[in-house]
Every structure is written in structure tokens, then in C-alpha cells.
Length: 98
Image (tube, rainbow, N blue to C red; front, side, top):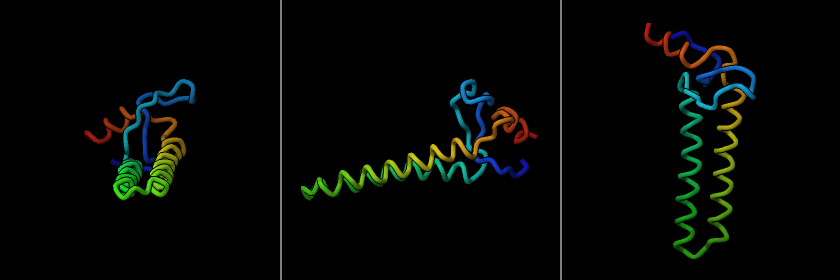
């Protein structure tokens, strides 16, 4: 597969009101964006749990919120800015099979 500047592709590209919501990662950068989101949620949850077990909710809750917002914001940015607006995911899957 040829290297692309895009990290994700939609199953049905087009204008934002017509595009499908499903994304597939096209390269390691797309997979890293997904991993960063998951790690933000899991890491924030782990920190919340650690501080909750020590009865320090005032520290655990903001840490979870900050990490969840950071991971979610990065993923939303990547899914908007780094998604191919023209080629569909099916086109990329056909290229991979060749």
C-alpha cells in the first residue's frame, strides 16, 4: 500500500453532513491516535482509582477529566483533520489486497 498523508478513511466519504461516521486507520499514526485516546481514558481511570483509594477525590477527579479531555480532543482533531475526504475505506482495502 502506498504511504498516504491521511491517518483515517471513512466508509462513505463526502461532505460532512453526508459522510459516514465509521473510520478505519490507514497507518500506524491512525492506530496511535486510537491508542492515545484509549490510554487517556484508562490512565485517567487508573489515577482516579489510585487517588480514590487514598480518599483524595479532589485530585483524582480533575486528573481523570484532564486526561479524558486530552485524549478525546486529540482523537477528534485527528479524525477531522487527518481523514481522506475523497477516497473511501473500501478503496484503501482494495489497494491492500493487491
